[in-house]
Length: 58
Image (cartoon, rainbow, N blue to C red; front, top):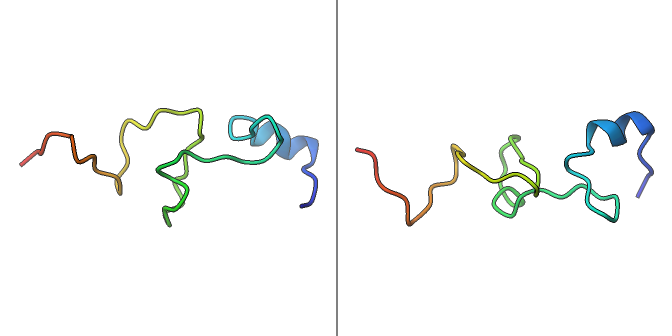
């Protein structure tokens, strides 16, 4: 795995884990959309994810 430059590390700092690799949220890992969120973020709204426990809006 190639090393990241200082500029890339600063840019990706919210996504980097303790071992220096990019980590995405569990719900975003296998998603094919480009709107990946960090593992540190709490997903409030995602256009592809709909919770089964959530209320339906009709």
